[in-house]
Length: 440
Image (cartoon, rainbow, N blue to C red; front, side, top):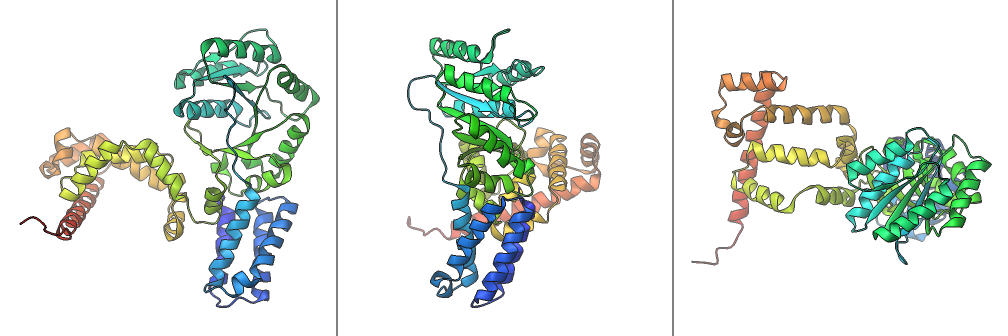
């Protein structure tokens, strides 16, 4: 995410850190590089101009000149101004009479239908009773796609043949009221480009039913065009928020940084991948940290909390420090880590130096290594996983054949596991020695 911009900004900060006290010339040079980095990232020119101006004004002031570490102070200013540019976070308005309607709008290919499924999953996890509404009668298989997502999520999908979208919205609201649903998500039709027919239909829906949330779904990877699309929709219908999809594939970051400043519409959600759990509530501080290469520790923690079973994790931790950690425990942990998302995304969320080291790791190679490790352990019997000491030469050959690997790969994994086991056991003993003996 935003790799190109992150690398450029880190290069600027590295140059600043090599100097002691910063002169106005040093700041001007740095701001010139920041400006170029943002423009290359496809950030809107007016946003770049205002941003650089605000940062420079603060960077040549007393808060930097009197700082113990001027370079770090400049980074702090850049972070604060980037957060201000991204805009204050705003949450969905789910107050008032139920069901509350959320209408998703956007052009074809922006990811509306998938976003509807992701949003349904997220809101249901928060205790809402959700129904999806197929309000796109034009695109072939649009209703089928939404129904497939509904089946995967166990969320009902409302649809009617031969009914116009405005009337469908009215019928869906009646169905939602009778069924006791708290949230209805309308997946509306898109077009290949902005046109009067599309806008008139969306306006008709808004006029027929009360829709407190109208979210524009826009592809972050199209950069500056995303800002233009948002501006076009905002002129015709009352947008309340934005869902930026494919943010994980955006190496530049222009749309995310520009769109709030230019349109005035708040970003509410980020689509971070293809899976139905790959959606985040927008947080400008966390996104700024990622852009500046500081990682997103909170995001990692949240993913871990959503994935790891607390009781199992506690039992595994106790076995670790007691030296009883087995290959079965290791396999369970690998599965949990992989369910948190693509390894490339997780590496990109690591902070500081760890994040810089992670940038040198090939995500695909790391993913392949995890898959290989899982395959090797899966080819073992339960007894072998619990007691690797019984793995003689013939067993290792069988495991290699079963996992599609070489015996050397099996041996390497077992050696790494033994080293980790010894280290964990040693840590456990040192921890115990540090505990005061208060009983006899």
